[in-house]
Image 1: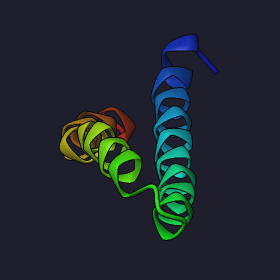
Image 2: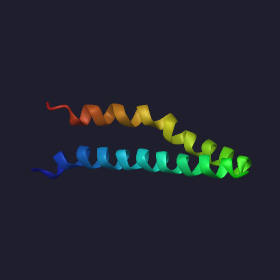
Image 3: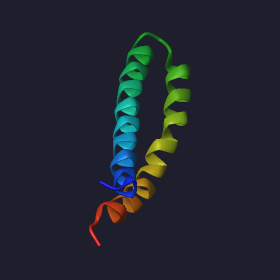
Length: 69
C-alpha cells in the first residue's frame, strides 16, 4: 500500500480520537458542573466549541480523500 493511501485513514482515526476525547471531556464537565463547578464547566464547553465548529470542515475533505478515483 503506498504511503499516500495511508494518509486519509490516519487522518480519519485522528479525527475519531478527537471526537472521543471531546465526549469524555464533556462527561467530566457535566460531573464538575453537578458538583458546583458551573463556571469551569462553561469555560470547558466554550473551549470545546472549536471541535464542533471544525467537525464538518474536517469530514468533507476526509470523505473526498477516502473516495476512490
